[in-house]
Image (cartoon, rainbow, N blue to C red; front, side):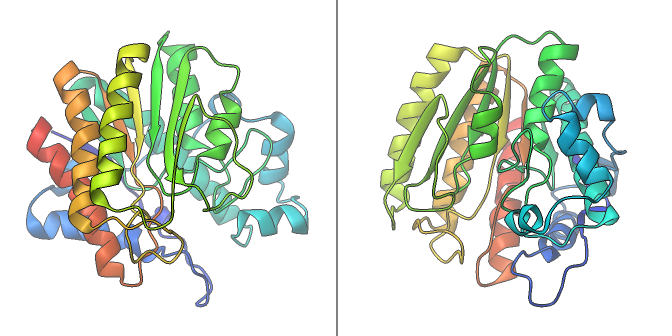
Amino acid sequence: MIKIAWCPEFCLPLPDNHRFPMEKYKLLPQQHIYEGTASKEQFFSPNKASRSDILLAHTSGYLDKLEKLSLSAAEIRKIGFPLSKALVKREKLIVQGTIDATKYAFENGVAFNSAGGTHHAFSDRGEGFCLLNDMAVAAAYLIARKKIKRVLIVDLDVHQGNGTAAIFKDYSSVFTFSIHGRKNYPLHKEHSNCDVELDDGTEDDAYLEQLDRYIKMIWRKVNPEFVFYQAGVDVLRNDKLGRLGLSIEGCKNRDSIVLECCKKQQIPIAVTMGGGYATKITTIVEAHANTFRVAKHLFD
């Protein structure tokens, strides 16, 4: 049974004019249950991540400022969310959701965090709607606590996972792989172990050819023991914050390539939602739901 992290705190209220679509976190579980791809029993509510686990990927100084709500105005602007105790709690819940998802992935082959994918958070700062880097903490957790030696992070959000790349730049145990828009945020890209930059408007065939070629090459090189998949759907052609040109079906085929690799090699994978800012919320929910549908078809 595929397990999915979800809790009401993922749906943090935001000002009406905010461009981040929190509504998707509420609607996606409802869609799974409505169509019967998941039952209520498959959802689990994480607790807040412990300070010791968060510090596996973040500095104590930064975590102290978050907990004391003492970030500067400039630091808060870079994050893009109004800072609050509720927001910090939400981020800690997201981090633990991904840590817990790794445990369920070992049991069932795949597990999901219906939030997560906060890849713009650096060890000492937050950016781009990201305060704490859930995949980085969970990867460091596996290395430190479970003695995993080879972790692969596949980041297919339209934006480069700059925070993740920076956190693991000196880690031989973590290989970071990002396919993203060349001209998308962030303006300054960090160096992942493998970066594939795509031009504006790149469509299904070109995208999928690149993904298939690179992931096979990387798999042979890394031979991972665990995979994290940042499955952002802001690669869609109508996304407000993306510049690529994938269709809904192309995005689903993208998910199939990644998940089939893990299934074929029997490597556990934890999937995080990542970005999605299409003009219609139904498009965002459908694209995210497809990722779970693919996993259900392969792993159930």
